[in-house]
Every structure is written in structure tokens, then in C-alpha cells.
Image (cartoon, rainbow, N blue to C red; front, side):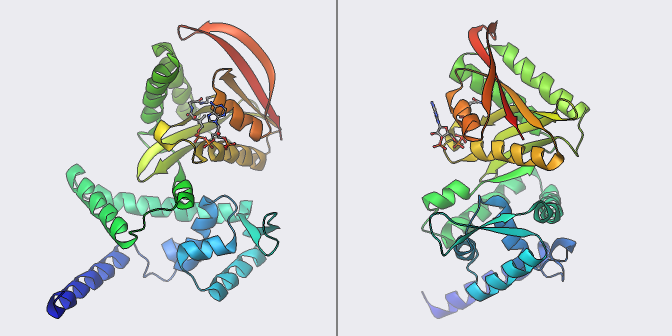
Length: 313
Ligand SMILES: CC(C)(COP(=O)(O)OP(=O)(O)OC[C@H]1O[C@@H](n2cnc3c(N)ncnc32)[C@H](O)[C@@H]1OP(=O)(O)O)[C@@H](O)C(=O)NCCC(=O)NCCS
């Protein structure tokens, strides 16, 4: 490539970097109006979105200097934000988890970042938003040309709280997928609509939660944890889109429900499922649930066997 072209291109990329770092507010002293630096915020993100990573995994994914990361992690540990447990596979490594306090401090960062990007997109029309996101996906592909490794693919999804439009998605996808995969009729969709309507109408944000899973900017799954009584929570409407299955998203959604239920102080989680939902049964079993009741019934135009599962916390 001729030098003059290259110089011009370098200047264009640098101008874009200046514009975008200003646009997303990373030049401010505290990252997203918090007491964390940008790098600390990114480390917290990795810890919140990965399942017990090692420091080596976090370092590789952020391309950080080992000493720098180690100082950040020690400071997080001192502040009670991170816990280390020895890895069974490799004695030299520790598995890192955010503590409840770490999650509490990270939550506003996640929320502000979502709001901020939402506000940036809201200034654009539907077709401009598509153009922007398309251009960003192109940039991403071009500057990491190797594509995602299998383990990156498995971890490259995020969980977020529900927002306007999600309940409609949940009802729509529950209706479509149960009809396609199990032949349930539209009574099932009506049941899903009833559950989400009640969730929104009676929502107690301290004791109830909906997690929406996103992959590559698209919603791919969901689960709800609702209060059945003061001490009993109910897990509902677990679903992952067929193309995103097998990546651990379903298990992660269930594990988040269990973690949150413990944190809130419930004594038990219950759930209602059907004996034919084999992948879901496998996940519940893995998470420690067991069947306490089975009952044949005819619903959604099918002969089914309903099961109640429980997990004592
Ligand atoms: C259940 C569901 C949410 C799982 O989502 P997912 O993202 O694929 O889940 P994960 O990748 O975390 O795990 C799937 C597990 O099920 C196992 N599995 C998949 N199909 C299975 C089957 N037919 N029988 C037994 N286990 C099966 C996988 O091997 C994997 O287990 P592993 O982690 O021990 O290897 C998804 O299949 C789904 O939406 N199903 C339809 C809706 C549904 O059944 N919801 C439950 C309502 S109660």
C-alpha cells in the first residue's frame, strides 16, 4: 500500500478512536461515574460474565500486563469484591468469583453502560442503528480475524435484567418454540403471557428477577425467579433459542436464579416442568434440584406428565 494512503487511514482510525472514547465517556476520571478506573471496570465485567475464570483467562481476554492485573485483583480482594478458590485442575491457578458485594458494586456500572449506549442509539433512526451496529460488527470481525475460539464462543454472551419489549419476546418465543418442538397448542402461549403479565404487575425488584441472555446483540434466552411466598421462590419460563443451545447459557440462567435466591434469603426454590423436557431436567438435576411430585395431565392438547422439582437452599 502506498505510504500516503496508509498515513491518511491511520489518521482516520485515530480520529475515530478520539471520537468514540469521548462518546462512551471513558475519558472521565471515574469509569461510568463510579470509583473504578476503566481497566478495573473491564476486569469486573469479565468476572461478572464468566463462570469462575482464572486470572490467566482474564488477562488473556483483556491483553493486560500480569503485574497490573494482579494488583487490581489484590485490591478487589482486600475490598471484599472478589473471592479466590483453588482450581482442582491446576494447583497453581485460583478460580475467581465476584462476591455479593462485588456484584452489588458492579450492577450500577452495567446499568449505566446499557443506558448510555441506549441513549446513543436512541438518537438514530432504525435504519441508522442497523448501519451503526453492522459497521461495528465489521470492525470487530476485521480486527480479530481469527474469529472466536470455541471457549470464547461459549462465554461470549451476556445476561442482563429485563427491559421494555422483553416480555413480548418471551411470550412470542415460548409460544413458537413449544409449538415447533413439542406440539403444544396456543394455550401454552396464553399461560406464558399470564405469567409475564403477573410478573410485571407485581414485580418486587428486591426479591424477584428476570434474566435475559443476549448473544451478538440478539436476545437468545430468559428465565424468571418469582416469589411464591416469603421463603419460597419459583423458577419459571427457562428458554434458550435452539441456535444458542449447548453453550452453557441454560445452566448459567438456572445458576443465577439459585445464587440470587440464596442472596435474598429464600429457603427453597420450586419449579414446575414436564417429564419430556429432557435437557431442562438434566440442568435442574445438575444444579441440585430433585423431583418431589409427578402428575399426569392433559394440557396444551397433549398428554403430559408434570413434575414439581425443589432445591433446598
Ligand atoms: C433447557 C434449555 C433451556 C437448555 O439450554 P442450553 O443453553 O442448551 O443449556 P446448557 O448448554 O447449559 O446445557 C444443556 C445440557 O443439557 C444436556 N442435554 C441436551 N439435550 C439433552 C437431552 N435430550 N437429554 C438429556 N440432556 C440433554 C446437554 O448435554 C447439557 O448438559 P451438560 O452441560 O452436562 O453437557 C433449552 O434446551 C430449551 O430452551 N429447551 C426448551 C424449553 C425448555 O425445556 N425449558 C424448560 C422449561 S421447565
